[in-house]
Amino acid sequence: MMSIFDCTGFDWDKANVEKNWQKHRVSPFECEEAFFNEPFYVNEDERHSEKETRYYALGRTSAGRLLFIVFTIRGRLIRVVSARNMSRKEREVYKSL
Image (cartoon, rainbow, N blue to C red; front, top):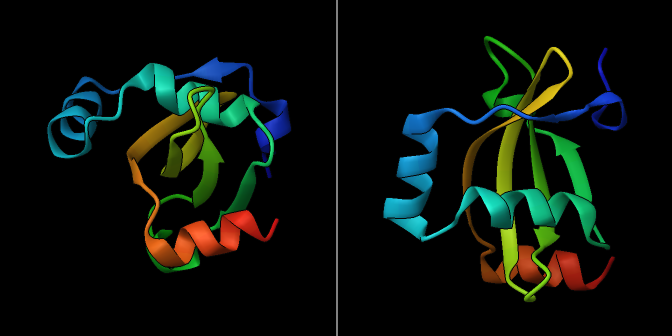
């Protein structure tokens, strides 16, 4: 199974980029930043992994925005499915890391 640490970049789907911007005002740049800032928490999203393994992540941008990101790994690329601000419960989990 491919690990996030084996990934070499990002694969952006135009429709997902537009959806994330329209619904949540999250840019691809902000998503990418979150993968490189600490703390960064990743877990498998078993409930939504029917066709391919999906993961969710809790991370922060360099400006301090706290994001909840759903992604998959295709080949050696991270493909963000959705991104939004963390909920109150997610922020509590993130701050305890």
